[in-house]
Image (cartoon, rainbow over all chains, first blue to last red; front, top):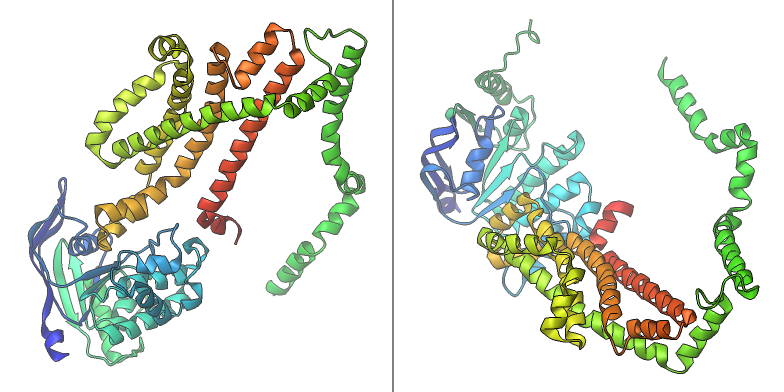
Length: 241
Length: 288
């Protein structure tokens, strides 16, 4: 386990991406070590999703070095379940081997969706659909799990449940996780390491040592929250007279 | 302060919605409820009256048989044509033509749509030709078809095939191109490969639109058959109708027309059944 944790699963050097005149990523460097949970913060348009798409192999039109070892899975902002495949078939989609159905069933059980395996995706609630999407990503036993704001469309109560689910799944499977989010509290609650993306490169980096489950009033998190918000260009002068 | 009256108000509004309406419109309530069975029955009044009028006109000689036979004559003729085997044989021949033409044209339309839909090279090779051919008035091709294929089964089947292929081509092509690009991305992250992407994402995604094309093409298939059978035929429904014209048998002509429309309705119902089964994933979205 220790060996796996220290091993690098993804390395990025000098990653640059332009959309016409606009430079979204400019010479970004990043190392992702096995088993670590990274949260990537940034304002809208800071290139978070662009970086994630490059790591997922969805954007080949980038310059720089991109070295991803091991398998990668993605859970998107919208769950992207294939509407004409039942939930179980969605999880199993693209899997090969003799025990595909068992593995899909196990993954669904892990996210608590066993009884919805035969349901059509359009009948699921937002939280259920996102859990199915997580099951589909994790059933592939990825070395790197990319989460592209998968909680942003959920209501606040469902989000808490799904946060806990993600932490539990991460603890059980130990993939490296790169969570793209614009929610500072979410990053603080979940991640080992928080990165702030600004002007196309990593502008701030902070490690979080507080043990999980974390409470948002933990002193380490409180002080870090202000620093991260400042790094994101948010000042709280009005709220703290 | 504000919330209790608010909830009272909404409760007061929600519960007696039905009763207030009936209190306010007592007159409207009665006709809406009592004669519900006869509401559908009312729709039969005018057709039945027309039928009765037709029968009377025929009986009094106002409407001569050589223009249009009486409804009772037509019914009797229908029974006769069925019992002596003429109609079943004619239907069988016509059905065979439609089936053969539909199979050929449908396969061609879908295959061409796949070729055009799945690659840019295929699109530039296939689509211009299909768009040009589509502009041809295909019933106008009958003289050419007779020259090319003679007057046997081939020109009839070919005409049906041609008519069928375009709606299926256009709809399947559009269906493929309208498949959600985000699902294609998902396919990439799931490492489906090109064949898997086509099988799991592209084809099922195009299916709803293809089924629309199927319904259109079946409608036009019957139309093409009627036209083809009018021109030259020695068997089938069209032959039966044309033959009847020679002998001024308007009763037989009407029976033939009724059979054509019944066949059209039946094939449409079959496709709708198919649609309900194949697209049950959408029904969940609508009803559950």
